Image 1: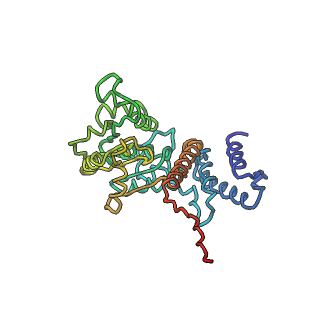
Image 2: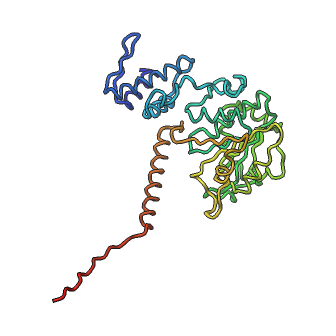
Image 3: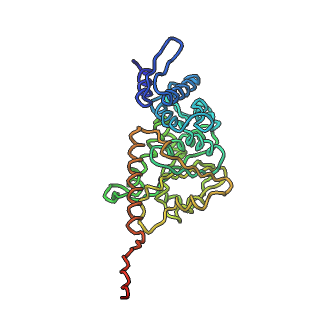
Length: 335
């Protein structure tokens, strides 16, 4: 069956139709609504192929999810409109490793990259798997290799998310490095290891805990603050006021994954409330539909969200005021 057979099977199984090749034509057999849905997905994938790209299972899954919302003007834009990162960010194609193709896979991701292209500060909020950190890293690497910035600075708040780092050997940097590993992973996935090492040795790429940002002015840099939901209000303000001339910043986080003490307000939530309307700042909300990891991740997040909603509804019912009606005793009649 090959790759095309695998993709066709995915569409058939999800849309509950049968797809038959008849020479230059493809026939979709099934109920009208489902057949139209499968037709729309096939047209989306054809647009991708015409741009010289073989659709992945992730892209098929996303198109299938989008197709549930209807087609036409009210539905999603054609997948063929998604541009490679190099087109969006205005940088040469050589900016990213040649063996990978980085481009937005969802409408939310496309809006995110557009915001990165147009604003000095972007705050991206969304669940795991939506590409918040990965696309920010890709934009940073693109900016560095096209010489629009002189360095990349990657930082995270060193919050012990239920795990204790004190037992780890080494100084503070060595203790925190494992916590910063996701940033390294994203970096190494798109830039050759030797080039990354060279950049780090020459300080063109720096990875450090957020506490190390205090007192600095970051000029001509692309700065990424990851896991920002675990910053305090004071830490967030400190970070945002580090930006110097020629710099750009991206703040990413998931407000449902806060590891701070219960009495401490997340700096990301505060930024989400305060920053809208500030010139040069874009606030982007990525949603479950923007998840591009294994489709299982989306289903897991949906299950947890449903459980949380049910628990909140149960609490509301428990604490709702109750009005008790008592039977009135009949008035005694007179003889």
